[in-house]
Length: 74
Image 1 (tube, rainbow, N blue to C red):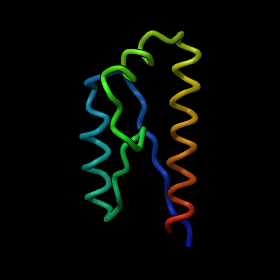
Image 2: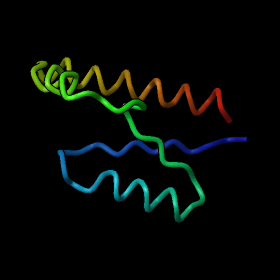
Image 3: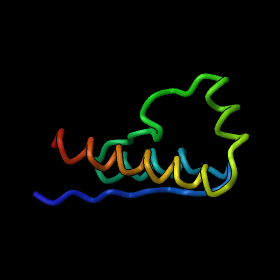
Image 4: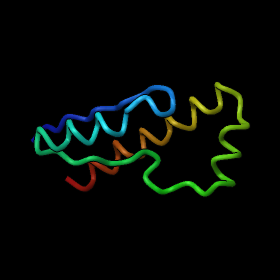
């Protein structure tokens, strides 16, 4: 079976989570937060202090982890 994987990117508080949850609900899908674990304030502070390139790479890596999670659990 083939599954669709949607990735919503954008600035903070743009409505990405709301849109993703609404889409998942409307198509009978599953919403998976990325990163898959809730970050501590210290981790968020560290990520926010990274260069834009390093932050981009961090989130690309997390998206890859979510994609692999979907592949192995479906």
